[in-house]
Image: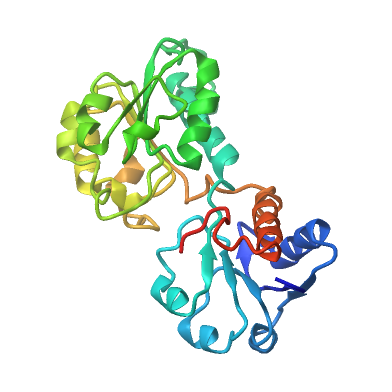
Length: 317
């Protein structure tokens, strides 16, 4: 691949402007032509000659004008919003941003576990009330956590939790692949994997198999003091079953960075539980987003230039 022409599409990720992304790519690929589109007309014009485009999405009409495009580097980890068949029909490789979120999402998960275990919410309320009163807490050491999904984020969580001297279990589609945990189960063994866990951490993709994965039956299996943390997707949890579990003290609490529906309506009962901590799909926030993504995209462009189209990182199709 000689003389690649990279188009950075208009986008904003976690409040970061696309110009920061273009600058990061230029730092890594100083000899490559990089165009930052700032208007729809600039996008349409640059797509006619671009060999690589990177951004949120490209629709079929845009693809029809991208005669030279070889790679679309999606800036999201998930690609379910893309018409992948349209890319495949045109022999355009699609990659994603898998791995970019690992460090920051893992920190979010551990932060949620610590704030629940050490009752920071109780401390904050007592401080607001100016009330000096001791309260019961626990610790992570010696407890068990089950990580559902051992992709880039799940593995990042496991590697960091190892420092807390916990027993770590994992659940993945192919348990024979193993992972940085003490034992790995298949999804058909989910109940066995969570039955003795004080922490159930969801980091799996949203697929036909994982929609409603955490349902009333799972809540019956979980320990009554277990914490559920979801940094996967909202529909992985059956929301009505979760509400009922919280109403009946079937589990100890939940940390939800994602919900179903999303945004969570103001009148939704999940807002009212003191042991449910909700954030607005915020765990992925990091100022390092474009730097980490640029490392992946720059490496893939280098591989394309060497004719290694079939050996790209994070290849989706």
